[in-house]
Amino acid sequence: MAMANFLALFLLMELIAGGYRDGANGLSMNYYVFSCPFAEPIVRNTVASALQSDPTLAAGLSGGPVYDIPKGRKDGRRSKIEDTFTAPAPSFNASELVRAFGQRGFSARDMVALSGAHTLGVARCSSFKNRLGDPTMDSDFSKTLSKTCSGGDNAEQPFDMTRNNFDNSYFQALQRKSGLLFSDQTLYSDPRTKSIADGYAKNQATFFLDFQQAMVKMSLLDVKEGSKGEVRSDCRRIN
Ligand code: HEM
Ligand SMILES: *[C@@H]1O[C@H](CO)[C@@H](O)[C@H](O)[C@H]1NC(C)=O
Image (tube, rainbow, N blue to C red; front, side, top):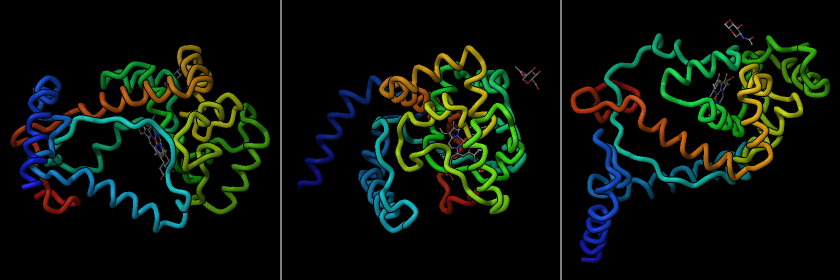
């Protein structure tokens, strides 16, 4: 009975709020309310316990914008390595990044904000070793990278000083000539993107707002409708 009330309440909310926001692409903010009402709490709990049990993430991911995205994307029915070759490369300069993201409908501002995802995590030496000895890089940072790479191609280097915190320190690193990938630091060499990066370095709230808007935009890319998509029974395989 409690469950029935719970669903009835959500049905009402779906009609009031969802009705306006649902796109023509089958996605909806409330997609799982009927199909799998506990999907979101399950994901939240699974992520929380994975973070707890991973010693490298002992502190857990922290900070960052909290936002809702349209849900209900289907899995693709094609999975080919060659489809990944068109992804932007870490060797891309600012103009190439602006063009590559522009082809997908993103502005330069969206692209810089999304690059701020590099506030989390690491890159392996193989992704930045071509930059070792770059005289335009901060000299202490350059030494750090050489030291990391003495551990081999798979040795990991955090993108910024707070790899588990979603913050704007990635953009502050660019200001100090301590961007990890060429595609990171290049955002600070083109005047069009430099002013955006400076803005995010100064005002974290602006970064968060632009980031969440760009993520919603990304969630609407290339949605597979009808028979073009499927719900995989094994996420690693096409049904
Ligand atoms: C602007 C173009 C981008 C390029 C050229 C790029 C390239 C890369 C490369 C080379 C790595 C390191 C891979 C490795 O060495 O293992 C990386 C890591 C990462 N990228 Fe990007 N990326 C881009 C945009 C994005 C976007 C838009 C997001 C998400 C919104 C993102 C999220 C991440 C995260 C979270 C990591 C860290 C993964 C980990 O710690 O294992 N990147 N990226
Ligand atoms: C960026 O890369 C493209 C393609 O390699 C090149 O034509 C262009 O001159 C580069 N731009 C800058 C500012 O280096």
